[in-house]
Length: 346
Image 1 (cartoon, rainbow, N blue to C red):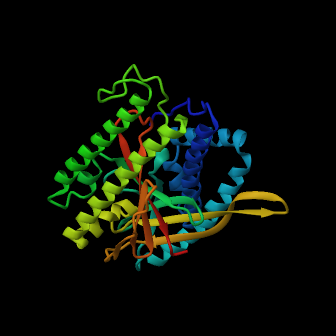
Image 2: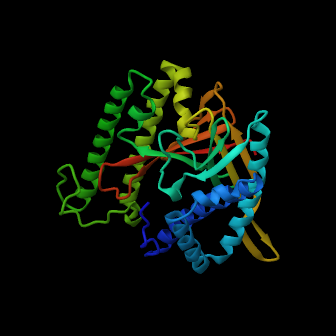
Image 3: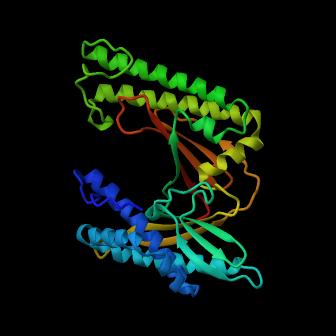
């Protein structure tokens, strides 16, 4: 694994917050796995696997966090400990007679695995004497949507709804809509500056590239495009559901983080509390463990709301939110579909 030693370079508060979130997630994975290994008596084998480059990266992350958000380290340790207690208890409850846990390995972001095709969304892999149990681990603010999937808009339908014969056709139609709306946006912004738009933001464009830097009128046009992209995606998913609710509900499973039937999703929720005038953003709230099995999901499209770039689909106790966002710069016709879930199990 190659370590990026430039990870400390930040230029603004947004980049710093993103880096804190990345480091927070990596440390949380390690701390939960290590605490579980201790509780389940496999600490030695865990430490043997977690060494070398992985250990060095973790040490750099921890050093950076001590300098930039020292209080968070203690909070993470507490949250990870409480999560490991719940997860260890759950794992022991699902072991069959004679089955023993042999190893616990971190396979998530810090290892560079990027959720491979075999173990899907897993961050931690538990190996027993008879099977492998993938664990998806999340740390989230209470009542917030938890990110589960992100994909390019121009391949989203073809990739996640390929069980439908119409997937490629729907994808092609949606791509045409993306290009059409992008062209219309470009024409408006160029015309406002007395320029001619020729299908792309070229060297004559002297405006910003980032959405947040646009003036109010330009930003209104940009957000209108996002809303229309969201509306068209909503209508396309409705068509899939009308073709086959059964196929559609199964296609949604990876979007809510259930890439495989044996995946266990673990989410630790924290909340903000003020005690004696001191604000604590990481007060422990609860741990939610969802042990997935193949089951029917009741799909309900919630009404589409105007003036928004997202929409919601209810699947039993889960709300799947699908949002259209730019890859980064709005000046290219590249957009992503962000999926996140809020559960009503809490």
